[in-house]
Length: 480
Ligand code: NDP
Image 1 (cartoon, rainbow, N blue to C red):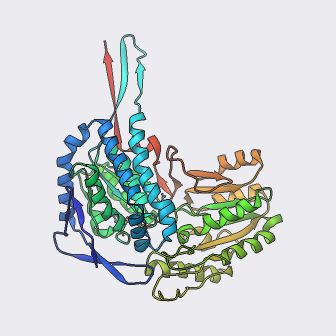
Image 2 (tube, protein in one colour):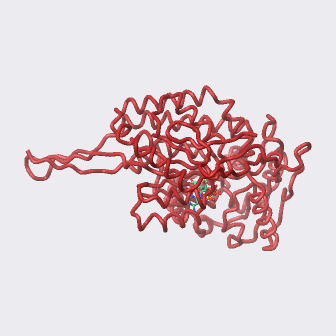
Image 3 (tube, protein in one colour):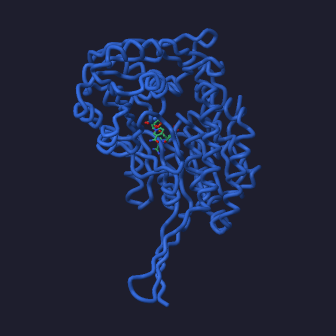
């Protein structure tokens, strides 16, 4: 049994009330560890440690903060195998994915923000009046809260805490209680890298109690949250009257739009990936696939053939393409959506069933599923399923597909496949989404703004946007 502890003031602590939660291994359904079910008092301890560390950390020279973050990045890379194993076991994702993407990207987050802070220039203006100058100070906010989901556990956790820390804030962070392991291991790495005590504090527990204590804390001045849209709305309601700064990265229901003039083979391979990577549990997955009428029947045959060839298996096996879903309740939710789609006259073209992986019969495995839907209004096209389930349907014209793509409450990302430049320009400007990919998917450059419109969120992360969020701008005007 692995017993995870809270990381507060540089040390590892049991929860004050000695209250624990079970941690499940999704690949076999076993309980393999326990995590603190932290109370308000644990959050208060974390806050006190963070507050005490702030004066010194906020005055620590930029190049020292930068050096520590880059050291954390180096140590994550040096511990790649250990972190990838832990992530795969906790989340159910194939270890190949954790090793190639999740952990390297977590390391990149620290390296990127460690470097970015040294380039983060503030503005200065010769004043309109004679003999006066304005400049802007970018100052750390104080103690900030970072709350992250279970789908890309360390990757999204560090995407928040790296910019928060390097900007000079002290942090109280809560990973999802479903996937706490790599956040726990990160504490050791931070100590080894020389991060001063209390600068980062990691408190484990349930969203409704531990998370709630963070968002309700009157002196935690900013909340950076990634998770579901309804949780985001709940957080906004609590944070707004307290005037907390808020960054919300929420759900998605992203269109993948395929025109007949695209590079077909590249599109097909990437569409398999954008549909089923991480068991479809990525907010950016293209879960609604729209195909131009003239190639619809061909696409249907070719896509289904490729999807059927994907191997569902134990996450630790090198030939596994689809691992386990994160939890039993989540598996049930995804299965319900397959039933709902059938009830709404959807046709399951492949998949749709639970998979018994030999030796791991209690794991949460589901076949990658492709559903042909009769229209864009059905629930499976309007609501976030967040699993290995995609829908396909044909479209007649550019206007038709644009209308369907935008006719959804979410607006996180969109993908277009075409070689027509004018169409690319028209579509990318009219799609209601925070990110548009053309002839690719999930190609990320950390300097670019990341986030959604409509119910997909408020604010942008990434690059200088994140550093702006985690600092307060102060205008200084000097008359000389
Ligand atoms: P949730 O909203 O359920 O949870 C996200 C985090 O918030 C978890 O740490 C959770 O804790 C915590 N939480 C829950 N309730 C509260 C509360 N009242 N106060 C404070 N914290 C709370 O999302 P999931 O973990 O299920 O993640 C999946 C969702 O995340 C999907 O909708 C997905 O689209 C979205 N997502 C968005 C991304 C983006 O960048 N836009 C990226 C990745 C995912 P606990 O787990 O303990 O309940």
